[in-house]
Length: 312
Image (cartoon, rainbow, N blue to C red; front, side, top):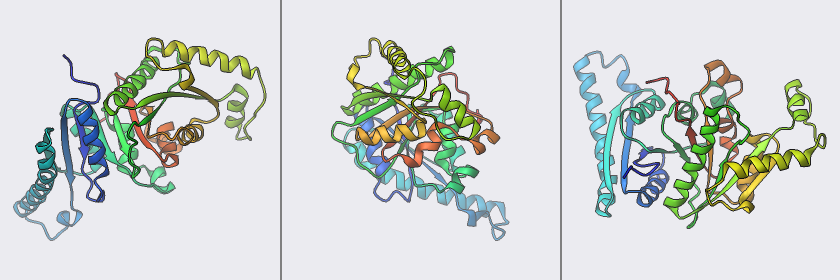
């Protein structure tokens, strides 16, 4: 029997996460899957790289000491988890930058999902792409679960954001992967899945491209929504998701999805992620990146099956 989707779960240790939010959620997910959990820590100290450590042997010894301390911290976290019956592995490395280290770990080790605590990002961080979670959305080859402080409900509510209008096979496959991940998460956590689709009408899209105000109330709106709902129903065929759990909204995904997530009191929003060139990243970003700070819930970003990490 193949391993469950999203397993093994890798939790990225963050010393700033004093409440161990990522670990608590990673543990709950692992318990609902097959009980496998990996704790990963990326250590780095800019002071060690300074001029006062000119002797390479002293520098390497200091790095080893830092890694040993990180591993000891992970072992302390792992001990009660193992006692509770989980299969827990630990790994600490000394690398920089952190986001690349996490992505390499996901490439080199069996990883079903990476769980990491996220923090608020001001616009400057978003524009220059310096935060680890912004970068990981683009680099991480495994499903990336970015968690916030808010605890999950007893029966978590999941919202899968899909676009059934893709005509090419690669993007159509991504929509199926998003739904697979949402259903796997729901099964592991005892939750339920809703499905959302956002779109821009042709008139609104043209207005946005011109920099004009959004256009509303134009075009055959009812026919458009009916066609999109039919495409959604076809996409969900055989999945057991009730028709009243589908929602279609006209508007920008980075605006409408957080609104719908709040409306449904969502615990985790599941969406897709793609890779772009660096200039495009700086100028426009992607749906997942642009809406991260608007969300009050957690975000699970799923990549296409043919995604190739630039670090590979």
